[in-house]
Image (cartoon, rainbow, N blue to C red):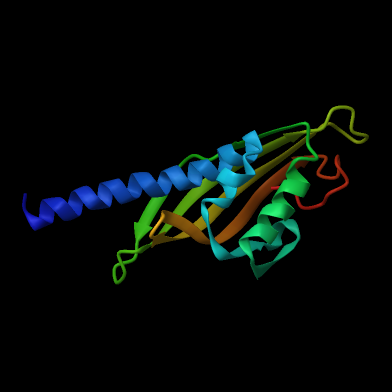
Length: 160
C-alpha cells in the first residue's frame, strides 16, 4: 500500500476511535460505569463546566470522576445522547484532535419537589491526545444552549 493510503486509513481509524471515546463519555455516565468513564480521560484532565457553575480547572482524574459520580448517581435515571461528532485533527501534531459534539442530557428524580425532570442541551469541545492506551480526553469544555426543568431535584447544582 502507498504511504498516502496508509495515512488515510490511519486517519479513518483514529476518527472512529475518537468518536468511540466521546460516545463512551455518555454511555458510561448512564450505566454508572465509573471505571469505564475514568478510562477515557488523561490524568490530570482539564474540565470547564463554568456555564453550569463549575469553574474551569485541572483535576486529578479520580477527583473529577468522584465529583461526577456523586452528582450523577443522585438521579434515579440519566440519559446522555452524544450526536453530531465533528473531528478535527491538529495539522502539526497527529496525536492531537478535537471532537465537537452535541449534548442532550436528561435526568430524572422520582417525586422530586419542583419537578422530576431536568434537561440540558448544548455541546462539548473534547480535546484529545493519543496515548499508549489509545485516544483520551485531556480537556473538556461544556457549552449550554438551554436548560429545562428542575436542576435542583437532587440538591446538586452541577448536573451534567
